[in-house]
Length: 175
Image 1 (cartoon, one colour):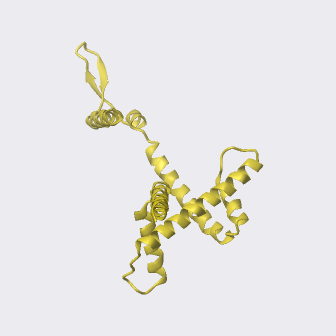
Image 2: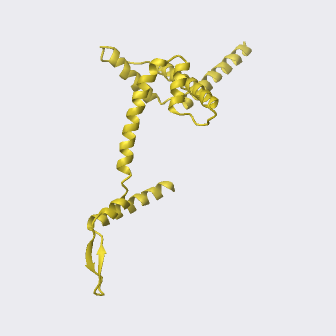
Image 3: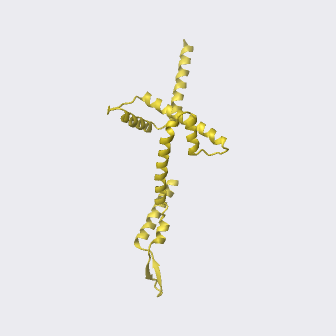
């Protein structure tokens, strides 16, 4: 009898460790819940959809396994090409290889949208405060020696102050 209880405790321990491991390696539950609810709301006319914890765990674990399988296949394709970095084309080929070709076109469209959005963000952020400073006009003022020197406009001083504040915040975050 004591041996059976010992075995049951060991099984419970293994299950608990597995659950902890899944939680650590799994996808964030809130994101999985949101994705599942969004998709189910698109497919169902019922507005109140509830999910059990076990179903969320099943969705999360299924997604994790799919990601592992897809990334391993893409890695194999990458290595066959004698490269070390997986690119989008490797993922597309992997989807075809694991027999999910219907996902390729939506993924390509999503990737293109992401790239467009990212390029717009980069183009607006590439206009650094320094390049903006050079483009701004400067007001000439007398330097006290009878000569004129250029003084930055007030908004340039504000930009410099704002940049200093950001740097101070970055420094405090690094500490």
